[in-house]
Length: 392
Image (cartoon, rainbow, N blue to C red; front, side, top):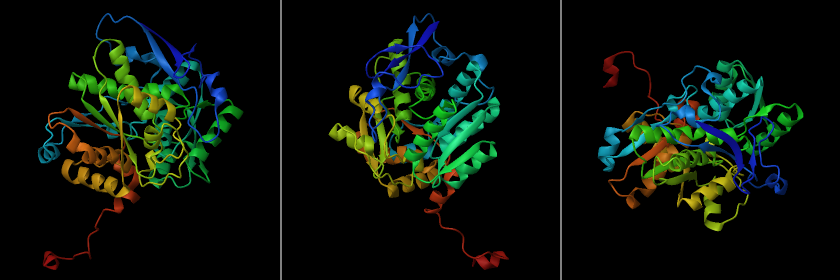
C-alpha cells in the first residue's frame, strides 16, 4: 500500500533505503566535532490510504522478517490511586516496561534486526548506556544474530548482566556514552558492521514511532500531552514521527503537545531550546538512560519541538528518585529513573495543565535495570526476628 524511502530532515534530499546509508551524504559533510549529528534521515512514506492501516503497513520492513517475539502492544493504563489523588482523571501510563527486555528501546532494535535479516546481515554493533545494549542483545538473540556492544564502564551492572546473559559481546569503554558512540562507529566502519546507534541509524527513529501509533489506537484519539524522557532525543523524534505519519494520513488533525523531560544536569536539548544553539555539557544524572553530553539527535529533536509547539522541562535527580518511589508505592509500577523522569516532569508542570486534559506519561524502562539507584530511596528492614514477639 505504501512505498518507503529515506529523506534528509535538513535538506530534503531523497535516498533509497540501503544498509550502507545512515546520514545524508551532503549534510553530514558539514559535521563538526562536539555537536549533534547533521543530516539525520527519516523514513518517508508515500501512498494512499484505502483502509484503516495496520501498524505493519506503516513500517518499511514487511512482517516475515521480524522474529516472533513480544515487542510493542504494551499496556496504556490508568493508575487509579494516582489519578484520584492528583485530580487528573485522564492521566495514562504508556507502560513500555512490558517489552521483551524491559524497555522502549526494543521497538528500535526489533526493526533494525528485521532489516538486517532482510538484507542478510549477521552482526549488529551499538553503543549504549545500557538499555539499547540489552535491548539489541535480547532481540538479536531471538533473531539469531551476533551483537557487539560498546558500553561505558559506569553503566549499571544490571544492564551489563542483561547484555551478557543474552550472549552479546560486551566491550566496556573508559569514558562516557559519547566516547562509546564514537568507538562503536569506528568499529562498524572498519569491519563493515551494521550500526544500530541511536539517531545515526534512521530505523531507530522509525521503530520508536510505533509507540505513538499504539497510543492513538488505544485511546482512539490523539492525546493532549505526552511527557517523554529525553536524552539523545531519539525517542522524542520517534514520538513525533508516529503522530506526524497519522496526521499525514489524515487520521488525526493535530499533533499532541510533546513535553521533553530532561534531568537538570543532562539538559542539552532544553538549553538549546532556550538559546537556539547546542553546547556540549558534562552530563551527570542518576537517570543514566538520559545522561547525554552531546544529544546525537539534537538538531532533529529541536526542529520538531519548535515546529509543533513542544515544550521542555528539567527536573532534579532528587525529584526523579522521588517520582520513582511514588510510582512504585502508589501505582505499583517500578520504573527506572529515566522513565520516572516523565512523572517528575508531569508533577512539575501539572499546575499549568487542564484537569480534563488527556495526558500520557511514557514509561520507558523497568526499575530492575538499575537497582543501585532505587536503593537510594529505600529503607531496609532492621534486625532479623526469630519470633513475632521480637516485633514488640
